[in-house]
Image 1: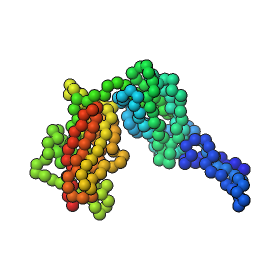
Image 2 (image 1 turned 90 degrees about the vertical axis):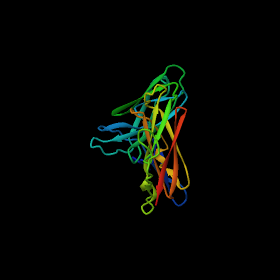
Image 3 (image 1 turned 30 degrees about the horizontal axis):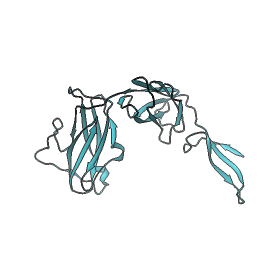
Image 4 (image 1 turned 30 degrees about the vertical axis):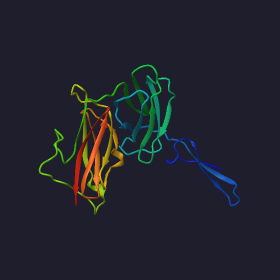
Length: 250
């Protein structure tokens, strides 16, 4: 027999697993097919609905799928289509996971044009616009809780951040910010920012190691420590970098 059931662990219509008897003969199979959503909402959680990217670059989109009550909806097929520079790219379908997120990785393979519009559809529709070309920053300014929020200068007097050793070091994560501007001092949106940290006993929350600047030209990361000392946080965007200290104490 064949049992067809929706199952979020299977990304496409396929056999998830089979049932066999003691002799190894298959007596059943479980398959799945993405369910349709008749009402609800989808939105682009990451990276952004509009951003810049170098030609030949890649971006991973996370599409949030919710029902009409705002509850995350799993196992929903989201159709992906393209117009513009990559208009001849074959359409695709991705399926939302148990948390209601559908993930699609896009790579530019076009040769003509400077923009793309990517459309995600599952009853509701969300679109993303990519502009291709030179993404050269004029400056990057990193600020932390231990610097001036406007100039990046080290704070005085020094006021270290607390380590949350008892509750898990990640609980004491602090926000650091990168401000990206062009050569004329105008903030740049949609620019990829990559983050690193150095220092003993220091780390970044893995979900914040890269991101894109928003309308204000900023992107943020979260740094934490499990040992007292100075962590040096660095942001790189558009060929420019800046570093700033994040200081922790027990």
